[in-house]
Amino acid sequence: MTDDAAAIAVVGLGNLGLPIASRLRARGHDVVGVDVSPDRRAAFEAAGGAATAPEDSAPRPVLSLVVPDDKAVATLTEPDRLARLVRPGGLILVHSTVSPALATRLGAACRAAGYGFVDAPVSGGAERAAAGSLTIMVGATDDDHRRALPLLGELGSDLVHLGPPGAGSAAKLANQLMLFATLSGAYEALELARGFGLTEEAVLRAVGTGTARSWVSDHWGFYDELTRDYDAAGVPDDHRPWAKDPAQAVAAARELGLDAPFASLIAERLSIMVRNHADPSHPEPLGSSPELVEGPLRSHERGEA
Image: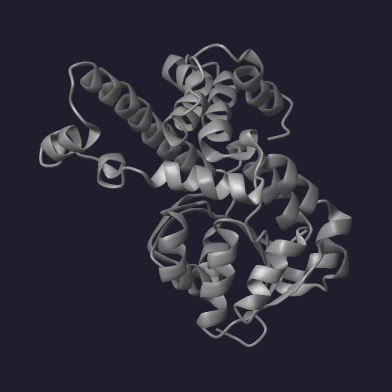
C-alpha cells in the first residue's frame, strides 16, 4: 500500500461506516470520517479518529461511501461533490447497498471522469466490519479490482469479484432477499409454534441441528438489537435494510420485467414483523399500514432509496 492510497475519507459513520473507518484506522491508514451528524463524528473522535462535516472535507486519494441508499450515493457522486471528496484519479469504493442500475451508471461515469470505481457492498454486520472479516461482493474492472484489493483485504475475509460495476450490487440484492426471506419465514414459523404452546428458545434449539438451521436462527435476536440501535440513532424506518432492500429488489425485478412475488410480500410485511418482534408491547397488525408498506416502494421507483 502506498502512502497516497493509505489516505482515506470514509463518508457515513453509521452502523457499518463507523466500524469500517475504525478498522482501517487500526490497520494504520490515515482515515478521516465524514458525516453530517455531529454525534456520529463525535463517536469516531472519541475512538481516536479524525472527523469532519462534508462541507469541510478535503479531497483524498481514496473515497469510501457507507451511506444509506441510492439517493445519498448519487448525491455524493455528483461531479462537484466528488471534486471536494476525492482527488483527480482517485479511487471510489461504494460499500452501500445500492441498485445495480445505479452502480453500473456510476461506474461508467466515474471511469469517464478518470476515477477508479469499485462497487463493493458488504455483508456481515458491524462486528465483522470491526474484525475485518466481512464478505465483500465486488463489481469492478480488473484494473480497479487489483487497485482496491489491499484495502478490501483489510475489511473482508471473503472477497468475491463477480464482474464489472453493478455485479456486486446485484449479488448483494440476492443476498438480502435470501436473508430476509429466511427472517420472514422464521417470524411466521415461530408464531405458529407459539400457538401450540412452544417457546422460541425451544424451537430454535430443536431446529439448531436440523435442516432449518440458518444464519438467522444462529443469530436470533440480532434484529431486535439492531432495531433498538437504529431507534436510538434516529434512523428512519425506510432507511433500515429490512425495509429498503426488499423494496429495492422489487424495483430491480420490475426493471427486468421479472415477477417477484416473494420479494413483494417481504417488502410489504417484514418491517412490521421486525418491529413487532423487537417491541411486542404494541404489536401492529400486518397489512394495516399502507403508508409504511408503499412508501419504500414508491421511493425506490423514483430512484431515491
